[in-house]
Amino acid sequence: MGRSKTSSGGGPGGSLSPGQETPGGNAGQVAEIRIKELLKELFGLIHEVQKERDRSEHNLTNISKTHERMQQEQRNKSFTPYYKNKLRGLYNTAMQDAEAEAELLRKALDKISEIKSIQNDKRHGDVDRPKQIMRRGVLMTMLQQNAVTLPLWVSKPGEKPPPLCGAVSADNNYVAKSGNKVAARVKGQDGEENWILAEVVSYNSSSNKYEVDDIDAEEGKERHSISRRRVVPLPIWKANPETDPDALFPKDTLVLALYPQTTCFYRALVDTPPKGPQDDYSVLFEDTSYHDGYSPPLMVAQRYVIACKEDKKK
Image (tube, rainbow, N blue to C red):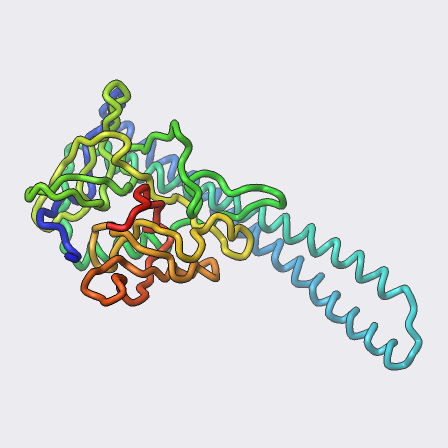
């Protein structure tokens, strides 16, 4: 099977969504001011995280020393409940410290997400700026960076991962925003339909249709108007295999995955799900050139692995 589209094009960029005001210089200045405020708040949160970490390190050191003293008592056969009670208190404090640090990290991630959202809105609101055409190597690097920097969802105790976290699908009424990356099923110049990586330009609620731009800009912009059912939003959070394994596609699940070094999604079977927060999926792409009908295992980031709506093998 082929690994590149016969008609490619359409890099980042797009028009404003319906009802959105045309931003002028003032809107741009407001966005810059807000970004500076958020960066200042983020800087403060990072300092708080470090202070919390220093505090917890001191407590962890006390836990280690208390364990050593307990072992010494056991060797001397003079064990008393004192150190056991002390350990219980130290562990409770350690858990509270960890939760406090996790809450600060959640707040910091929210600030980063808001900054990225403002930057994205500003980029799409700059209608006077010429649309940039990216070289293939630059585009592939950008896609890889987007996957690596995708925020990791950190669940609170008992909390379930939200929609668009890993393999968790979007809500039925979810509408992707302008600038969001999606998988879109479009018809090429040769009449063949492909799942491509695209960027949302706008959504018309009356017709239930998206306008999307092909992300691959090698041959210029290519815009498609397609129905909502032909668009699948990409994950906006990585799932943590250590805390939320149910938010990942299990082994042998049929998925759509972005083939390495292309901007096309193809059907594949999950060979191995991610084992750690920074790990990728190992998938087997359907490929008739191999005797068993599948390619050797290839690595694909969580960002670019989505549910396949078609159950039957082609």
